[in-house]
Image (tube, rainbow, N blue to C red; front, side):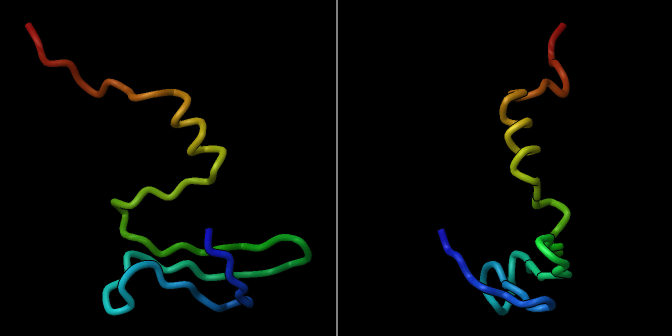
Length: 68
């Protein structure tokens, strides 16, 4: 795990700096609350941990069935 320190307004570039996959920016710090902004292409899923765990626990969903 990589742990870094950033101040409000500072960013972390994910992937190749010339063509990044995405950018994470510290949008706001107020007391013990930190707002984080994510800039990723729409095709990249970004979830809070509790939502990701819920998706995993539900298992794969059937979108369509092929058959007679």
